[in-house]
Image 1 (cartoon, rainbow, N blue to C red):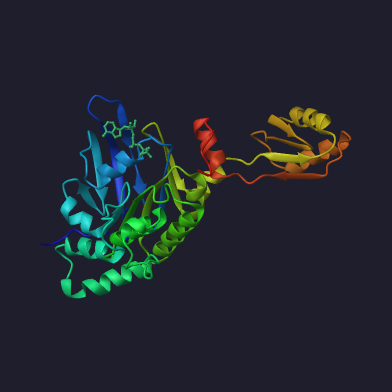
Image 2: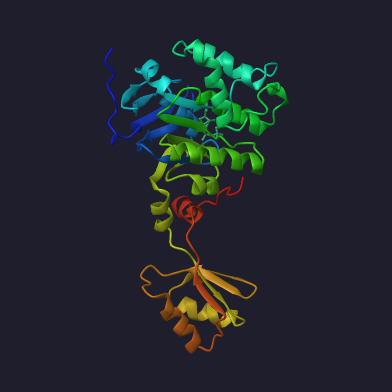
Length: 320
Ligand SMILES: Nc1ncnc2c1ncn2[C@@H]1O[C@H](COP(=O)(O)OP(=O)(O)OP(=O)(O)O)[C@@H](O)[C@H]1O
């Protein structure tokens, strides 16, 4: 059978008006238009309950959308699920592992369940996947003795048994300690460097900033924005910060010049610059003219967190 191949420039995931209402519930996903470029590390960011897992389930053909369409690797889901899924490695809601089997035997069992996997090359394939995730030395230990991070890596190894065009990882670092998180992140980076598109959901902003090239932000089932991480961070302007012993006078002068949302912490005054501010140095000159002793002045770098707060008016669980 001729398979319609997705071209190099086509998005790996594209949805139009994708929506899901669970029986008796409100819209868990509401009119989602998502475009995931090939070669990106795409962060799907949103607080718990914002609809990330529901979206991923629809993308993987595990549940039917209530309305709208989803294309994955150029094909309509869930209609083409059997053609698409072999090209996608997915880690959704923790890997299904047998605790009484070793890490290696878990992979052997999964590989054997894949009708397309050649049994003659199984041992080599399993060995390579274990090495890929750094579990080569622990391959003979029973999976129930694995740490959460090791289990997660074993799940990734399962997703990597076959070469994949796309990896879909639902909260891959959830519940991991910082070391486990670092391991998964560095694995994601190296997979991306080899050309695999990675779509990963997370409720952690700094995780997205560290590993992703692109981001889509979800809240209450709706997509707030999507684009490159750099674009989104640039859309939020950084705060101005002045270090001075004359904080009260500094606040007065800054307010006069349109700086708002001013806060004072010790000898530091920070605030939102006015919309039209072209030259922050003019503010320094004004402060100095008013006799404020300026010890330091700077514009803090806008983070993805600033952008998120600007979008939603809400704070965010940054470090997890
Ligand atoms: N099987 C289900 N039946 C009914 N409602 C559901 C079901 N699964 C999820 N929901 C609801 O849909 C909404 C979105 O949930 P979803 O799991 O997609 O969010 P999420 O962003 O992935 O959050 P989390 O990270 O907590 O899984 C929530 O209000 C949730 O309670």
